[in-house]
Length: 420
Image 1 (cartoon, rainbow, N blue to C red):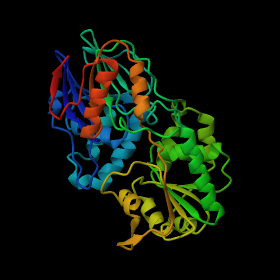
Image 2 (image 1 turned 135 degrees about the vertical axis):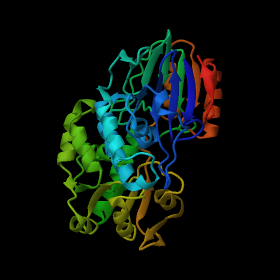
Image 3 (image 1 turned 30 degrees about the vertical axis):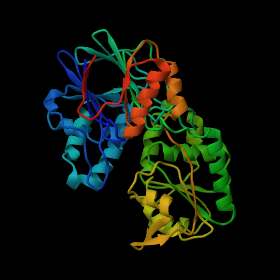
Image 4 (image 1 turned 45 degrees about the vertical axis):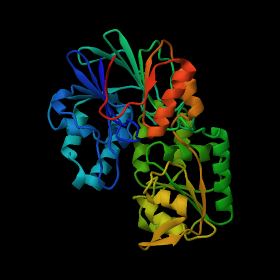
């Protein structure tokens, strides 16, 4: 096999890896950087790609996939849940950034028609004529998997985004990988330890109660897929006694997840949480919610769009209210500005936030200890490539893997090719 790193090397976002066999080629993810003017991984001609294996729905892994369906002959292989959630996010991507995108809605339809739908945990799936793939659960997001590839007697693990910790929504990743020759691992939080999940959950629920019981509204800007549902499940599991509303694209994600409850850790809790929500029905409802003590879970998670922009402009100016940041905030986003400077836009003007602001680390990525724990489960003596992290994290993590486990490890750069 020849491996070429098209994106996600020494960077977070635009994940894309080209794997070449003797006769056929496949892609592991093909994401996008979803800034104002989106950017994509290194170009590869669609005619050179026979199959795309997609780990999960987030746009930094899926955002460029429709590019390969401008012509026939390419197959997308992924779980049915990942396909539906990806379609939801890509439709929104086209709506918001269509002018800058090199594909259209019709290409998204072609992608759906050309997809082989699998289940999380499926094993020994024949891909093209020479690859066999398995799809263990990644624990990162509903429907998400790692990818195990076999070709010519070699076995490759691509982690995509992986999480070993159980959450209210998902069980931790499946680490039964067997003997490996190659590991391509994310490095996002390889230099950071996460606080214990129980501690984070306790602090979040306590903060929510404090805000509501003093007469305020707690805004929780949350990603539509995964994070919004996890927090609804958390509040329900703790018998949170106050109203919880949900808005925006997260409601569509709820409908999809209801059809795939077998992918969730606790389907009964999920149903109880979602059925107990105050589902936002329109603008009069939104205006009422910002004046009524309770919790509002609403996309977008970085405050860059969606209903959370309205909620933020209102709630940020209420001293009794609060804002809980529960997702990573990319530099340059309104959420990052809010965190770092305590400023938000109100009527187009930068304004000091009066509400109480707290950050909670509900990361869906493995932290430093969990990544090393993953390597404790790896058998064989694989070559390791560290990706999906900033340059320093990838390089340091590669050195540490070599020192701790004796594996040959490196942090590739975009465009690098290796033969294994």
